[in-house]
Structures are given as C-alpha cells and as structure tokens.
Length: 191
Image (cartoon, rainbow, N blue to C red; front, side, top):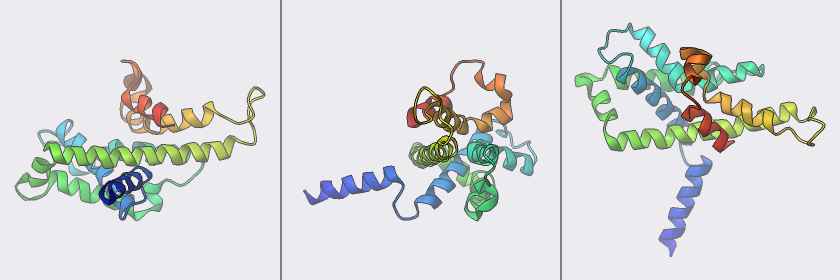
C-alpha cells in the first residue's frame, strides 16, 4: 500500500511541477527539444553557422516564453533568468558539440525522447497555466457584458503562447495553412 501512495505522490508532484529541480529539468529539456529540432531538420548537415543554429534552437524551444510576455508588457524569462538562457547554451552544446556526437546520438534514442517530451510538455503546461492567470488578472477588471469574468481572452492568449516561435519562424500563414497545429490544440486543451 505504501508503494502505491508514493507513486501517486510522485505523479502528483510531477504534474504540479513541485518536485526537486523541477524548474531546472523543465528548462533544460525544453531547450534540448529546440536544439534537437534544429539539429534534426535545419542543421542536419551541420552547414549552419553556430550562432544561427543556436538562435533558431532558442526560438523553437522557448518561442512562447520568449515573445508572449512582451505583448503584455512583462519581462521575458529569457532575459530575466539565467536558467533559461543557460539551459539553451548547455542543450545546444549537448546536441551539437559533444565529442563523437554523443549528445545528438543519445538524444535520438527513444528513452531520451520520452524524457524530453515529459519535461518539455510539463514546461509548456506550466507556462500555459501561468499565462492564463496573468491574462485573467490583466483582463478581470474589464469583462464582457455577457459574462462576469473574462473567458476567451485568457484562453486564447495562453494558446497563442505555444505558437509564438512558429509564428516568428514561419509567419502567420505558414504556421496555420494546414489547419490547427498541435501547439494550438495543446494550448486549448491545457487552458
């Protein structure tokens, strides 16, 4: 019985992001996901200049948290926190410059992809929760005449959060021309 309680506690701590080194793991794996996305696609042949690959990796990994706060007149964590930018640097080095290309090779394995998705998705979900709260507190004093609290604004703003990197890299039309991207679906579901 004790084992199942501990597993349940671990699961709740994971889903709430309250475990030890939660923020650090979320930031690193989010940055690693962006660095690997660039390495596997745009920079497969390693022809990009390092700063170009690094910058695109930061935008792919942290696009929402990089741009969305600026829309609300708030500082972005990329500039106000050493953790986010430091994670981008470490993840970029792991995906591109470790000896024998070991970081990239290990990063492509199924267990590491699973860990990457688990922590980067937790990062995205926690970001959506935070941005819904920020938007709600910003809009709460000016609700629509049809409902006493703002509903659509906070949900839409938090959903756009996960799409900022793609809007920046591909443009509005380029990101949406094939239908509703997974990042929007994810944002609507979480918000």
